[in-house]
Image 1 (cartoon, rainbow, N blue to C red):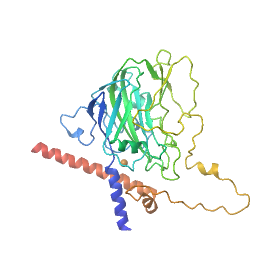
Image 2 (cartoon, rainbow, N blue to C red):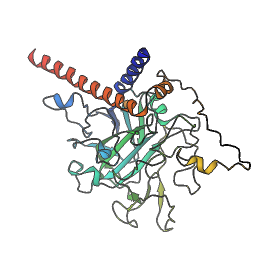
Image 3 (tube, rainbow, N blue to C red):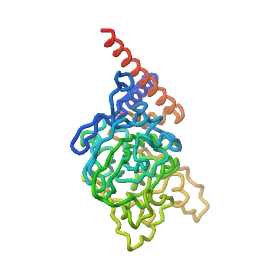
Image 4 (cartoon, protein in one colour):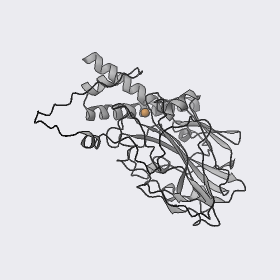
Length: 373
Ligand SMILES: [Cu+2]
């Protein structure tokens, strides 16, 4: 028992240590370093970045807080990267743990003040230009990211009206998302100056916080059992760009749930953004389709499927079927049996905190040593 607890602790420590950040971006063929939470703030002079600050490699779990926009207490980046509409932006993450399965989402927001550094990301009008979740073969966007050297590429819509934009790229880890606020979001924002000849603006936008709700099907979800047939990627569908002349102006209407497919005005040319070439096509119904998705969240599923028995036989207690074995080094199932949900959460958070603080301490020491040398 003792040994197994140590094994579990080591397992969690491994997970925590393996969180990731975007360490590099390729924009218009040029490489930019990402904001480094464990070194940038200790350097003098401080490295100048295009990416807004992030406090750590840890996740945002309260999606109703401002932190969901560009990460916790995110500060504006001093630099801006020029980017051509229609070109690709590559986000190179540090090593991403296989256990942190989930989707990726990328958004843009026009900096209407003309200077993204002056914006409050939680007030901007965001629209989704790229997302990927569960593939037909059971792999996740995160698996594809890992396979591609921890890299995700998105394409800036060619027709987009040029100007200053914030791009918000994120991964979402679903390994603990069967508990409320257990989904782990890893958002980051970057200043862009988009060049081009496009004339289009988004038809609908969302706010952060606001775009995600703690009980969204893609946020409060058990990805282990029963096996998911369909995964509802959080947030709005991919943006539809409309000509800025006939559209409702910069920012467009606010996207609202539930998803009602609006009848598009025939006179407005509509451009649907196609997902970037890197990802494999998802063969599940589109989130905006009117057909209800096959998947139902665990809480609502039983009521719909159980038919009352005709003879008054006692209702059998459902025996928990063991989940299919996952090719993972951590004995997750065992963890679940041995340690209750709450305790597990505390251990995880404590381990992550200790590792973060320890890393900071080591770096501080190193820098002090360097200074005095
Ligand atoms: Cu993690």
